[in-house]
Length: 571
Image 1 (tube, rainbow, N blue to C red):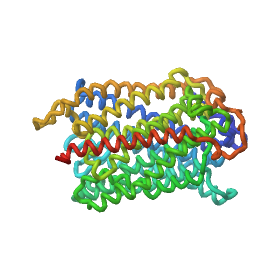
Image 2 (image 1 turned 60 degrees about the vertical axis):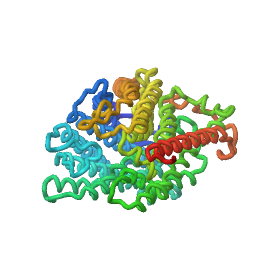
Image 3 (image 1 turned 135 degrees about the vertical axis):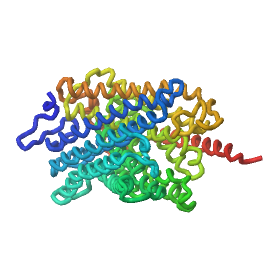
Image 4 (image 1 turned 30 degrees about the vertical axis):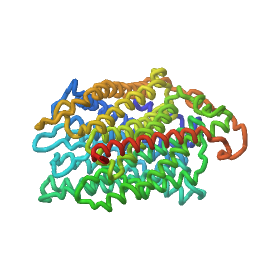
C-alpha cells in the first residue's frame, strides 16, 4: 500500500509525461518531492496540535495552560509550523522548480536521502529537547534568545537540521549546473529562476543560523564561558527572519507556477518579474532589522537605513509581483475568451478547485494583511507600537499562515492530483477547506493585530488580559476582542485539520485517476487571438491595485494616528 504511493507508470528510462503540465518527469525527482511533502504535512499536524493549547491559553476565558507548559507548547507550535512544515515543503519546491521543470533526473539522489534523514533527525531532537525542558533551562520559543539557557540538545538539533537542509538542497544546485553546462543555453524558466533565488536567500539564512547555533551550543556545553547577547540577537535574525524570507520567495514562485497551470495565467513581462526576484536577493533580508529597532546597541542611522531606504527595494519587488501575477491571470484568461467585463476573468475562474482558490486566497490575504502590516511595522517609529505586542503575532500569522501556508496547501492539493494521481476524498470538503481556513484564520489574525495595537497587549506573557503578574496594571478592556479571537482560532485549527484529513485520506485511500478537467477546467481552450499577452486588457487588475493602495494608505495613516496618541502630539 505505502510503496504504491511512489510508483507511477514510467518508461524504461524512468520518465513519464505529466498530462497537466506537459513536463517530462523522472522517477528520481518525483519520489523525493512526495517524501518531503508528506514529511512537511506530518510537521503541520504536530504544530497544529500544539496550536490548540496555545489558542486555549491565549483565550483567557479558558486559560488552559500555566506559564511553564504554555511556553513549551508555544515553542513546539513555532518550530514545527514556522520551520519544519515550511522548510520540508521548500526543499520539495526546489526539486520541482529545478530538475522537474527542467526535465532532468535528480542528481546525486543519495544526497537527497541523506539530507532528508538528517533534517528529520534534527527535527526530532529539537522536539524532544523542547518537550523535556526543565529548569533552569527555558523553552526556546522561536527566538531562543541568549542568555536565557535552553537545553544543549536543542542547539545540537538545530545544527543538525540546518546541515541537513543544506545537504538536501545540493541536488538542486547540481541540476542548475548541469542545465547551464549541458543545456541548450538561454535563460532558466521563470519558476526555476524563482527557485534559484529562493535557494540563494536560503543559503544566506542557513549559514547565519549555523553560525549562531554553533556559538550558542559551545556556550551551553561550557566551552565558551559567556555569550554576548547583542551579538547573538543580530546574528540570530539572519536565520530568524531569513527563514521567513525563504517562505516569501518560495511562495511567490508557487504563485507563478500554480496560477499558470490551473488559472490560465500568462507572464506579462518575464524581465520585470525576474528583476523583482533579483531585488529580493539584495534587499529582502534587510527586513530583519525591524526586530532590532528597540535594541540600544544599534545606531539610529543603522535603524533608519535598514528600516526605510534599503527595505524599500524589497517592498518594490513585492509590489511588482503583486501586480504581475493577477495581471497575468487577467491577460491569460482574456486571451482565452474568459474575461468579460471588469472582473469576468476572476468571477468565472475555477473557484471550486482547491488548488486555484488556495492560491488566490494566499495572494490576496498575504498582500492585504501580511504585506501591508509588514511594511508598516518595519518603519522605525511605527515599529514601537507593534514589535512587543500581539500585533506582531498577528502580522506573522498574516504572512506565514494566510500567505505561505495557504499557498503550500494549494501545492499539496496539486501534488495529490498530479504526482500521487489520486482523486480527492471528501471532495466537497476539499473545495470548501481553503475558504474555511482563509476566513477563520483572517478573523483570528485581525483580532491579534487589534488587541496589540489598540490595547498594547504584550506577546511574551502567557496571561495578560486580566492582569500582568506582579503589577496592578489591567488590560481587561481587551477581553471582548479576546472573546472573538478564541473561537476563531479554534475554528482555524479545525479548518487546518480538515486539510490534513483530506490530504492524507486522498493519498492513502483516494481512487487512482489521471487529473483532468476537475484540475484544469480550461484545458483545451484555444487562444482567441495571437496578440502578445501584454496587449490584452488588464483594467481589472488596475482597479484591484488601486483598492490595495487605498487600503495601504488607510492602514498607514491609522497607525501614525495611534502613535500620535501615545506621544500626545499637539496641544
